[in-house]
Length: 181
Image 1 (tube, rainbow, N blue to C red):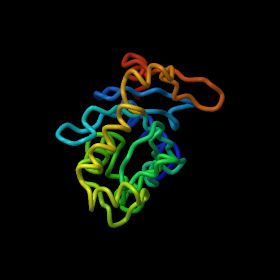
Image 2: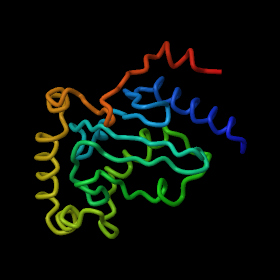
Image 3: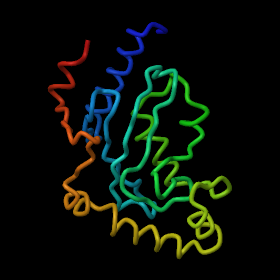
Image 4: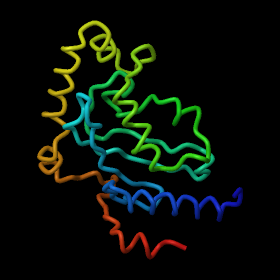
């Protein structure tokens, strides 16, 4: 699977698989640029939150990892508050072509939110609260969810997760199935 056509096929297959899963996907410019609605994992302080996560697939996907970032704000030691950048080894350094997009949303991000790593933070304030004042950390998460990460907040923002040109399109399950080879 080293040819550009094989890589493109894999990209298309992985995006279709994600669309057909439980995740809401909004395609931006093409199948290599989209936004996924991501719900906080149950049993964590994030469980009532809903975030838009932007995914950009590089030309060399699946051999090169996708770029992901939270669009709406989240308070977490390993997520940069300003840019939404995620510090996650499995995506940034340990990515292999064995992984696919559903792994990110079904495993990697839920694990990151469930088990923060305050030793290697992108958000020092979140890391310090997590380590030294865990109850304040949980309160801050709830404040951020209420302010930035509810269905109502996303609706008020128009659910707009579009690219700079303002074009978005939701890919229906039927359209996704039509794309399968």
